Length: 171
Image 1 (cartoon, rainbow, N blue to C red):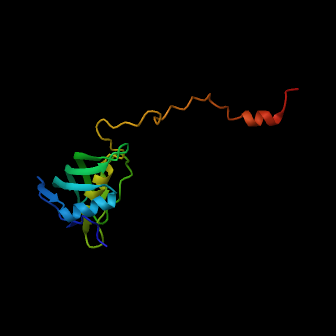
Image 2 (cartoon, rainbow, N blue to C red; image 1 turned 90 degrees about the vertical axis):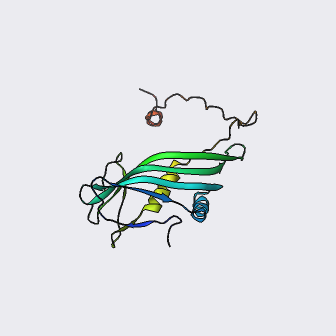
Image 3 (cartoon, one colour; image 1 turned 60 degrees about the vertical axis):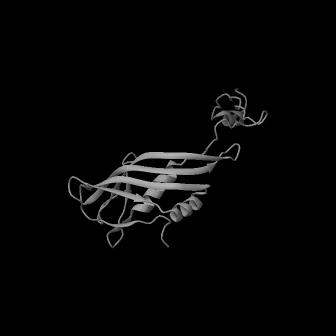
């Protein structure tokens, strides 16, 4: 089964200077992604990026992802529109490439046995990670009495307190 926003690409080496590209989701793809992410609507999703060679035969993709998402406010349940304009960096690994273990490095995409990768799915994942997990409408607040109070601070517990109690009084 193909993802909602599938853009399968063949791993080919672009010119050293890079190639500019644009991907845009159709209204049907946006609606399917909204359903997948559990949001009210995704009105727009596009990415403008540069495709450059990456050492070892891979690709370096750098650009911006733009989207307009509608989610429900966590307090009032009113629709909240969020405009995203976020930079991204992706590395497409060559077929024999080894994924990096650097947690701060760019996200990596592996190619399949035919040398293809799904750039649309990678961008959809970037979008899902960029959505506000707790959207809040302007001026939305909890009714009086429902605000969460800070828990009183407990004194640090001695990890050996139970063992000391088992030992009994000092002789």
